[in-house]
Each structure stands twice: as structure tokens, then as C-alpha cells.
Amino acid sequence: MEVYGIGAIAVPIPKEPRDEREACAQFEALLIQKLLEAMDRTIPRSALFPRKRAEEFYRLMWYEAVAEEVAKEGGVGLGERLLQYLQGAKVFSR
Image (cartoon, rainbow, N blue to C red; front, side, top):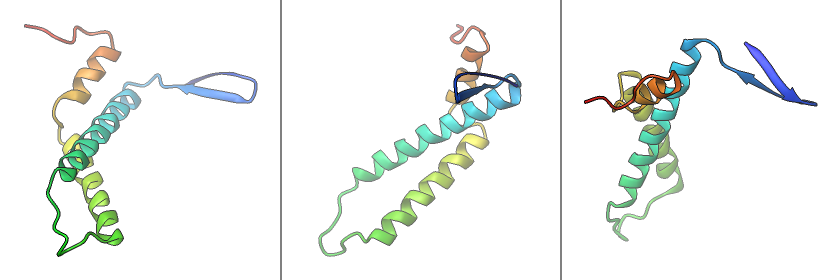
């Protein structure tokens, strides 16, 4: 892995395909997590059962775990398309 930088700031440039694939899967997991969180905000809440901070923290951890598993099992295809784009392949084929 080569490192390029100016002064004390160094940025590693991934060269191995495994690094790119992992980064794309992590990016897809992040987007899935944000999608789940956005969907959760649309659920009407009752004043009878107010949300507690611990419940909210647990719910966010659960969304993160679900998103990582979905991305690891192939996701929605976004990570693979992004990897193809980064590798210079034709992204959209008909």
C-alpha cells in the first residue's frame, strides 16, 4: 500500500481489491442503516409510551447490526455497483 501526503498528513491509498470491496460493503451498510433510521422516524409515536434514551440507543445499534448483515449477504446491489465503478467497469448495462 502506498502512502501519499503533505507534511504530517498521510493518506493511505488502497491497492488491494479486497480493501475496495470491503469499503464498498461498509458504504452500502451505512446507507442501509441511514435508510432504516429514516424509516423509523416515520412511525407515529404515542405520548402514552414515550421513547427512552436507552431504547433509542438500542434501536440504533440494532439498525447498524441489521445493515451490516444485509450488506455482508449481498445487500441491495449498491456496493457491487460502486465497486464496478471504482474498478472502471461499465456500471449500467442493458
